[in-house]
Image (cartoon, rainbow, N blue to C red):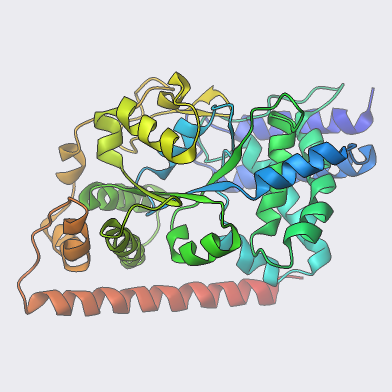
Amino acid sequence: MNREFLTIVDLEAQLDRHLQRPRVTNLAAVREAAIAWSQAVWSASGSAGLPTLTSSEIERGFAIARRPVFVLGSHRSGTTMVRDLLDHHPALSVLPAEGTMLTNFAWHLKRLEPDSWLPFLGCEWLRRLANPINQQPYWLLGRSSPEGSAYVEFARAVRAWWPLVRTQFGPRTTSWPLVAIALAYAHCTRGFGAGSALQRWVEKTPANERFLERLMAEFPEARMLHVVRHPFAVYASSCKSLRDSGLPSSEESRFLRQMRLSYREAASRSVQPASDSYLLVRYEDLLEDTASGVQRIASFLGIEPLPILAQPTANGIPTPSNSSFDSSNVAGKLNRRPAEVEFNLLTARERERLSAMLADDAGKLGYPLPPPPALRRPLLQIWIHLGWVVDRFRTRWMRLRSAHQRP
């Protein structure tokens, strides 16, 4: 019996005790336990050695790597729901947690020595497979035992694919570390054998539309699914997340600016000719007629419109409600709660701020918002922009302090 696996099982049990059901609230305790567990798994993967990759597996893996599907859109717009609907299709390998390569990890990697990138991302993704979004389902690769662990096998696959992807994609692809993670996940869950139906890999990162041109240039065969939702519903959900997490209300300015950038990009592309690489997905349309919506997405991706596309899952495990306002729905079923419930939670001030920033672009997307009076609108925009600048300065200052304090 392997002593390292016994340690992993023990640390896994400790972490599981902190993973509250249905949702994590003690984030600090979870992170501490998750770090200890992921480091033990990573160490065990180093002792186990690299898996053997055949030339045909490598060739097929590289072919899949060139054909990603990027699900993007404003936070709280429905990107998670779209990703979960795609999850269990046999032609797709869908990362069950946000990629955040360009929005988050790129910053961290710049401050690390290149030799530290692999263990940093490897351990981070082990934690994401155990606890993707701080709510059920957890342990997406199952549970470890004294005889073996799927998480060790994933870490071994990451170690094997990392140098290959770095050589093949590194010189021209900013997101090559995420490609290595995606291939390792596909290797462990779908495989690259001759019988595999796999055609593409999928990842979702809100706000990635800021990097749309770069992603299209680095992945010419990529497909972009840009999800939009009524701004009132998005903003209501965002404000609720602020309250639930205890973050200051000043964060609202950051949400508003991110929403403006996302809706402006969507509005601009909505008046352009249809594209083979970009598809606009309205959240409400997908809920109102899911069958037609997934048929449209499947046609865009070039995959068969199987019934599984109407069932939200994460690595085949049913996922909870797509609404942040209702946790009582059955997992694996879409929540079609009327949008008016979210609209009515916004104050008059919040509606006015939102309309000042988004009225023009939202109207082009089929979401009419009453604009504030002509003289008041630019003043609100300036005030919101100043709030965003202050928030951005504060964030950068905290990042610099943390980097300076790191041993």
